[in-house]
Length: 408
Image 1 (cartoon, rainbow, N blue to C red):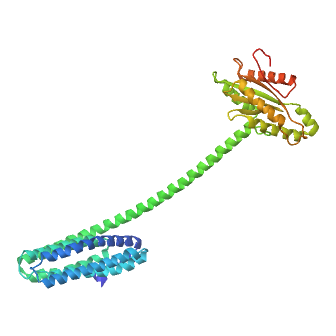
Image 2: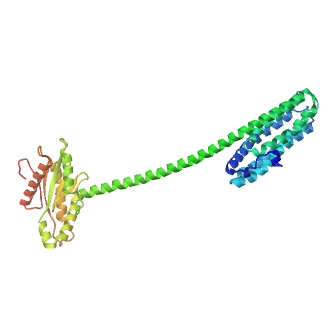
Image 3: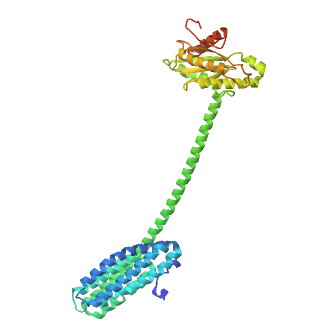
């Protein structure tokens, strides 16, 4: 029978069920809008036809139509709540489809229930309402092409018969106009449905492309974060290598190469004020000879820790070589640095270092020099060394500042 009518296949029989399911969802969405409009339009139409058709017919047809709209609302509500998967969409669509075909019969019953008995303008109003309702429903049914032919027949079978049976020039013209209108609407649906399908297909393709772009973006973000992590790891490794390259392995303070780099930087600023101190552990060779080099290394490590604890944050401590250390003090005059070195001397003299017998202190002799007018940091090192030599000659365990008159 469906083949004889030339009806389209059901959506679930389509080779593209996912596309058909999306079209059904659009149909239900448009149906929800039409339901609200019908509850306003149908009572208004009944009022317009009042006294031009029997009241019971107007009331019956309006009530029947509104009851049908309530059923539509109920089925559409269940569709929104339950139609999640594709098979659920088609299962709920069956009920909506049957009710839509029934609505075609209700529309056509307008010609019997609400057509005025007498000739007049209101008969034309009914015809216009019938045509307007058909045009609106055609838009509503555009996504569901399996309904088109059966709805057309159900909607217009009785009205066309009525136009034909009324006879006369007017109704013959209405019959011809209705046929032309139906053909135009059929042509409209035949062209609009493929356009709607292409729109849905394009939207799905866009959604797929968007998901792919989002996936690529997420992947690129992940790679960017991984690259940033590796860059940070590399930077940390470089910093660690740089720190190791500048650090003295035994004591952990700067080595001589790093010290000279800092001093060269200070030499670049002709206006900078700085001073430096050279420290030498007293009689350190005897510590190695009496207690061994392991104890000597412990004494060096602990001495460096005590010295660093006495320094201000901006001061730089470096191991110059053997048991000698250098303290570089940017922004500090030699007299102020000498005060700090005196605290260093006292701390070491009073500290009990691990590995040494009780009562045996490791003292230090210190020479201090300021920035010279000529010669830069290298000249300052020579002056501090001269002041240190003076401290050694005067009995060790003391601080001496180099003077311009060369008297320590």
